[in-house]
Image (tube, rainbow, N blue to C red; front, side, top):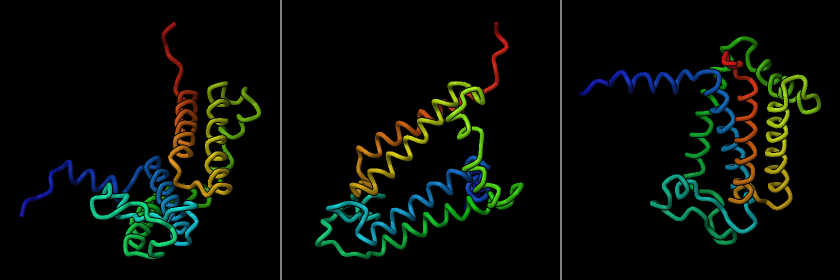
Length: 185
């Protein structure tokens, strides 16, 4: 058998022991995936369709990604596989977060109590970049929740487009406001 290269080993180590930032992404995407999988099982992910995760993840190579809600089976094996994959990512993220200072409780508190959200009302805390970034982040979350709850648009491409655009600008502006000042004058 061939041995794993150093690159392969470092990738595996990065996935099994993610950094703080990667842990946040693992938890966020893992929990979002589990949430969407549960909505799909309940038939509440879209007003007309049920999602086949195998079809989505294989770009419809194995089967159709979206089936008619009235005729599609309410449970298929790809639901279990998708939930397991999302659970694995969330679990790896939580394992790494729990090993850091303060653990999971401190991490959850830091999501809601931080300088970014405080700058929503006071630009002097982090500057206008941070204030605009915080507003973009907040509007992105509100957009996704509003259209998900009112129009069952949890997987609607238009809702995703607006949400991803707002979240991307929000993260970029917040990170730009946190970057060190240039030494050039």
